[in-house]
Image (cartoon, rainbow, N blue to C red):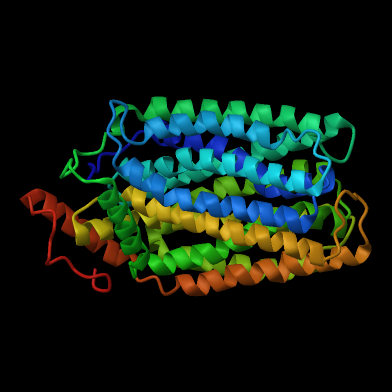
Length: 479
C-alpha cells in the first residue's frame, strides 16, 4: 500500500505518456484497419471480421497471463517497467508489419496475413498495456490522486488518437488519393512505431524507482502445475468478485459498442454523409479530441464532488441516448452537424470513461481488504481481457454487419442504400449498447462512501500490523 503523498504533475504526466504510443496505434486499428484491408487490400469484409475477431480472442487469453506475470516480476528495474519497454519496441515492429502487406493475390493469403500480423500487434500491446495500467493504481493510495493519474493516462490516450488521425489525414492527402496505398501505409506505420517507442521510454524514465519489484514469493518450490493452478484460481476469484463483475459486464457491453462505432466511422461518414477522408480525419475526429481531452478535468472534478459511480452512470447513459438519435438525423454533405454534435457533445460525454478505469483501482483496494494481497496486475489483466473479448465480438460482428449492409470490398463508391443501413448500425445499434452498459453498471455496489470505508480499514490494518489474511474483513456486499 503506497503513501498518500502527493505526486508532482510531472510524474503524473510522465506516467500517462506511454499511453500516447499505445493509443495512436489503437486508434488506427479501430478507425482504419478494417477499412484498409477491405477497401484497399481487397479482403472480403466477412473474412476481415473473422480474422480480427480471432486475433483479439488470442490477445484476450494473454492479458490475464501478463497481469499474473507482471505482479510477480522481480528485477532491478521494478515489476512493470521492463514489460513497458519490451512492449513498446515490439509494438512498433509488429505495427509496421501489419500495414505492409505484399503480393497477396488470394483471399486466403490476405486472411492469413491479417490474422497473424494482428495477433503480433495485440501480443505486443499486451506486454506494455497491462503493466502500464496496473502501475497507475500503485503510484498513489489517495483515491482522488488516482483519478488524476488515470485522467492523465486518458489525456495521452486522446493525444495519441489525435496524432493518429492527423497523420492519417496528412498521409492520405499526400498520396493524392482517397486512401493510403500499401506503400504509404508502411511509412505511416513507421512514424507511429517511433512514437510508441519514445512514449514508453518517457514513462520508464519518469516513474523510476517508484516502480518496485515484486515481493519474494512465499514459497520458491512451487511446480509448474501448481503455478498454473494458482493462476487459474486467482483469475476465477477476480471474475467471481460481486463488486467487480457488474463493472466488468458493463464495460464489455460498452466496449463492444465503441468497437462497432470506431470500425464503422469511416464507412458511415464517407458513404452516408458523403464526407471525404480528409474531412473525417482532420475536422470531425480532430475536433472530437480537442473537446474530449479538456473534458477529462470536468469528470475528475465531478468524481471529487459526487464520487465516481453516478457521474460515470449518467455519462454513459446520456452518450447512449444521444448516439441513438443524432446519427440518424445527420444531413448528407454538411460538415458542421457532425462537428457540432458528434465531436462536441459526444467528445464531452465519452470522457466519462476515465471513471471506469479509476474504479478498477478502487476495487483492488476492496480485494486487498478481503484477501490481504495487492493484485493490481490481476484485475487490470482481467479488465483488459474483457476489453479484448468485447473488441473481438465487436470486430467480428462489424465485419458481418458491414457485409449485410451491402458494402463492397475494393470499391470506393457504394450504393446509396448502404448509407442508410450504416446509419442504423452507427446510431441506434451502437447507442443501445451504451444504454445497456449504463443500466448494468448501476448495480455495481462499490459507492464512494463504501470505498472510503475500505481505505480507512486498510490504513488501520497497516498501522497496527494486522496479519495479511483477515477473516474479519467485510464481505463484498458490506464493505
